[in-house]
Amino acid sequence: MEYGFTLPVRGELANFEGIAGIAGQGERLGFVSATIADHIVIPERVDSAYPYDASGRHPSHGDAMEALSTIAFVAGRTSALRLITSVLILPYRNPLLTAKMVATIDVLSQGRITLGIGVGWMEEEFAALDAPDFARRGAVTDEWVTIFKKLWSPGPVEHAGKFYSFGPVRCEPLPVQKPHPPIWVGGHSAPALRRTARYADGWHPLGTVDTAELRPPEFAAMRDDLHRMTDACGRNFDEIVLGFVARLRESAAPIGGNDRMPFSGSAQQLIDDVETYRALGVSHLSFDFRRPSLAETLDRMEWFATEVMAKTRG
Image (tube, rainbow, N blue to C red):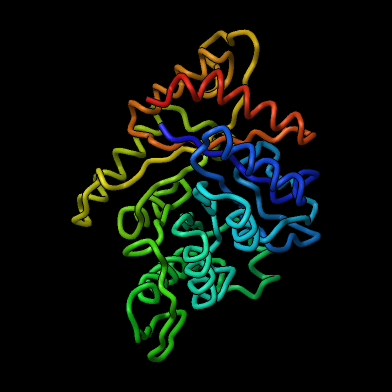
């Protein structure tokens, strides 16, 4: 099992000390990856329902570090961490500029970026950015991926699509990773699974969906759907990385009852959950270790590395 952690892009830890400190601690402790979320602006009024909290409200008050800039900074502060956008909302940015930025980061980090992608949920942010039509964001995302793959191959290349077109261009230097940086799809919907089957190298869902937990039975059913879709596309399912972004709720004492959430309770219960998801094919787990202070966050990461990660690496 490989382990990752979330880097703060908002809140009290979203600053030089917080981001550099958490990234450095994670690399020292042997975590494999750091994930970075994506928002650019938060409109004053947001009626769109946030799908990952029971309140339906996004916790930000408008503060958000830009994802690719943050990754570039962390790449310069580390030497081994894989840097994952979790997830980059593709319709927010011009596809040629995004492809160039990702390729540049890949070259300068010596091949350490993974492009986690999503379609977004905040319609008001789409409007503020003058992004493509919110209702067609899935089709736009698919076309942007097609454009990326063209631009990350020897040029000149050109594209004539429904949402974007350009004449013959070169977009070099090409990424270090071949044939291109890994593309992981976030989300748990049927379109997200189809997008994974057609285009992606990995599936990286968030464990909390629509206020419910993606428990092992639900995850297994979605994995099986993805397997069937991948077969239908003529691709090898075994080559797709299965990741999982989990909420960590550790406690000193075990939590009893059938309603226990995955990755909650004692260290042994967390270890048991790791093995459960490993058996379902998950090879990459990522957790959000943030606490109110940097010191508390670093201590929590060290506890997890000692009590859980070191005992489940094999």
